[in-house]
Image (cartoon, rainbow, N blue to C red):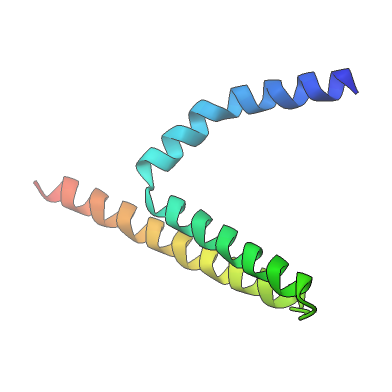
Length: 87
């Protein structure tokens, strides 16, 4: 158990800087993550109240949102590269 905790903390410490840099370059990821948290929270509340939401719907919505954001990031990078080459 101790080794698992030490390894987990080590991985988190190593991943913190690259992840922070990625988020700084792509601030829309923060909004996407907040949307995911809201969706998961609402699903948990609905489950607690007796309404079952199929997990496939949740995963499909999250996957679609991540795909759209990935395409947006690609488009922004290509636009940035093209504007840099032209000047």
